[in-house]
Amino acid sequence: MVLGPTVRDEGIVYEELKSAGQLPVGYAETQGPGSYRLKKSNKKTFFGFTVGQESWKKFLYPSVRNFLTASKNGNRFDAGYEEANSGKMAFFGVRACELAALKILDKIFLEGPYIDSGYEAARKNLFIVAINCSQPSDNCFCTSMGTGPKATEDYDLALTEVLNGKEHYFVVESGSNAGEKAIAGLNLSEAAPENIEKRDEVIAKAISGISKKLSTGELSEKLDAAFDDRHWDKIAERCLTCGNCTMVCPTCFCTNVEDTTDLTGDNAFRTRSWDSCHTVAFSYIHGGSIRTSEMARYRQWMMHKLTHWKKQFGTFGCVGCGRCITWCPVGIDITEEAKILINK
Image 1 (cartoon, helix red, strand yellow):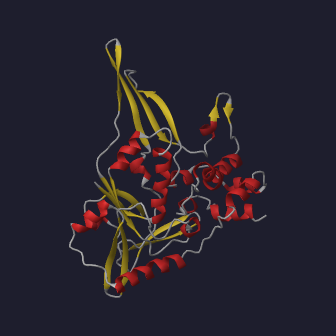
Image 2: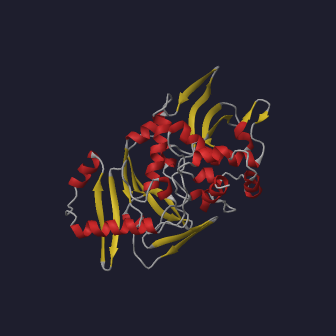
């Protein structure tokens, strides 16, 4: 199954692709704090956009998954475990920041003491075709996080789309043995020096087009020192605690587990679903919630991405894709808020 970007409901989404005709050819978008608009472009490029509200994690770590089922059978119940989908998949059009996000999820689900079997099964059967960015959005800050805009690792094939006058072609690079085998099965000509030069120009232009910056040198330490800063309250006055930032984030992995029955009482289900640290119930333990205020919940989310995650895993939990800025209804910008907190 090939999965890639396509247009639905005036946005870029990731769905199964049956043909190249489903790709968003001739589309671009404008993004700002709390703003996303998809538009037609005069350039007939296949990848003239950046990222929409969805991330690839939905195929590896579904938003809803049934773990267990139990059905009444006379005087007893028959219990069953629902196996995860382990069919072969190809992700087509993965951005460099999204590759970084997958690497972070691998650390969470594959490298700890407890392995997520569903994620592991899907990841083992995955072929990744990356795409180097040519046109970043106004909310991108991958250069600050060291994650893009060029794919450097963890892909099978990487493409760079070059549109030079009437010339329109892709430069293909292999990043694995599987990628080499794929290239061997195609009738491709070796890239000429001028093709490589144009590829590098595309990537250099993307780098120069990224205007949003965040200094990460002592970011974690400075945010720790600002834990009790009053600016958190100012952010909370705007934050709706809707959870949009966590739902669109390619690295958030918080979930909730619920046990339910159908109306007959004969069938029971144990279901895992995505959750958000912005909800009051997420931090609930016996006696009440730990984080009852909007301020505490926003602070938890932001410091988890930029401080706690680095202490625990040695890397930031943010890859600079800018989704949380774009899809925040009130346009809270994590880079601007971090700057205020660390520059006092």
